[in-house]
Length: 476
Image 1 (cartoon, rainbow, N blue to C red):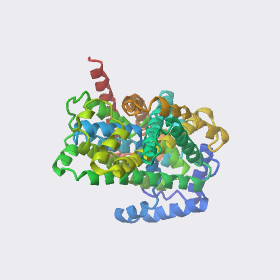
Image 2: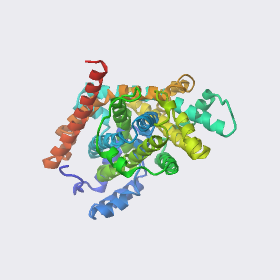
Image 3: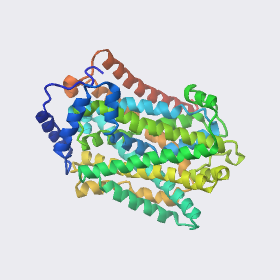
Image 4: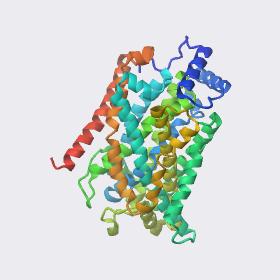
């Protein structure tokens, strides 16, 4: 990666502090992180920089944060939809999709973190100035639309699970819209704390970390109860990279593309660099940010999705009642209940799915707020900004009108939102080569070339797959 993560001897604490203050003024936050805490963290990172990587890693694990936000955002309706169908119809054969999709995302998000933390510049104006208005506007509009579209499916998913959990608790026929309003109230309260202070940001991150690992533990318990996997088949599922033929009316290529789009969406790409700036991270955090992406995003996502695929592969795909395309998490939970009991099948599985939907809803609201900050010139934390996070609130009606079909609707929604990714990724590829933007931090040498080639490779792969899929769907 060229100059990688060296400490720049010219970056004195005073210059670093002034640079971060500039970034905060540019981001127009209401409350910057505590300067003393930030100076102490930067000193700790500079001390770690001289140690071997295992020692650095132990230190980094105590400072994670933004990666978990990405994990919480991507673990939502699209993810559970794709994973349920993949496991129920194709067994272990599509286990490779989740880790590959997330690895591709890590390549791009690592570059975005490098650019943002090296320059301290707000990414959307930087994209507009150094890559061009087309890429900037495609990115912002894609992030806004995908966040808005996804709210309908997320509310439908969350309300359906809450109705089932209420039935399990003895409250039959709970109104779906009432459940949706409860989810809306939760989302407004949780998303409103972000940007108020550095302490509120830490609380928000802790809530998301708890929810992410709670989701993983729920699905791990379900897999344990349904039986350990066939390790040979499991290995082949992760490493054969095959796209099986259409089965039971389900095209594997649709699920592959849905999985690729759900892993790292265009709205995630918009939110991520702003959360880095909101934490006050800077140049000294560049290596930490990549560890954060791997530990906080790649691992939880891959583990959670793989566990869903394995659990459904064990319990659902042989059931003739599910030969068609109608399979929701509630139905999956009820089928699992026949194998592992009401607690595992409906309570634990349902809580895991609910955690995925709740976290995604709040983060999509947060994304809409940051998009409005850039497009409308709002101050983060202002009343106008908090109202902008309410842009996707109409999605609550999905709890009434999409309850029965939301999970299947989520799959094509993944694909539609995935269409915005190539232009966004190409914009960041161009930024990676703009010396006027990165200056001395422009990645150079062999490693910098490999990194840029990987970015273009990810962009080209996703574009080619989208073209191939659309071409095939049109019968051309």
